[in-house]
Length: 220
Image 1 (cartoon, rainbow, N blue to C red):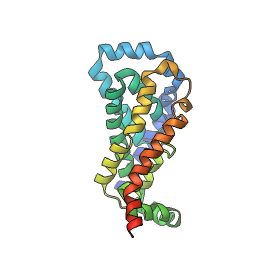
Image 2: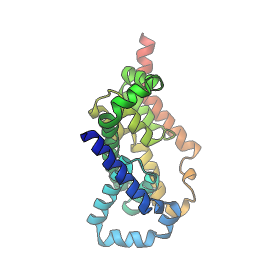
Image 3: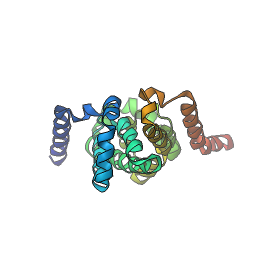
Image 4: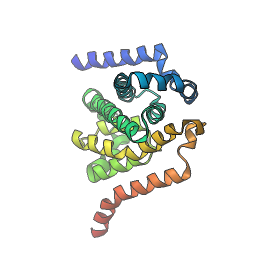
């Protein structure tokens, strides 16, 4: 009953947020048009702005709502590249952990039984390769962030491993997006951020994460 009540509360929260339509304002166009207003607010209320930003990022990520990419851009514009990436990392890591825990303790057993054949490959990869596989998924931005949080929650990977691989693995993407946010006037669409050179760099990082696995297989 506790699980059912908690699930209903989360569903009600998601529905409530969606009905307000607040997340619909998280677009590149709105960010660009409101940049002066936002910058003035941060300049006058820095601590409040930081707390509001991180909490908002945690809620969006934990509930798997759209808008995380725009929030990351906003972090770079409002707080700078390095500091913005730090705030993004905090919000994204805590939010991802919330989604992970919900998937594991509220839906994990049910979904594992219902979709066991479909989840078998993912489970096998996590069991065999552990952190290397998870780091690879984080380094390559073509895999949806929220989907990794939920699917990993359905596995038996330790929570501590999930947290540190998430925090480390999202650093390159966070830096790329906060840099783009810092150069907000030059960005016309989100696709411009993930240029072929940027994706290639992420793939190289993913290759480095898989290097221990490759060495292990070669030795075997």
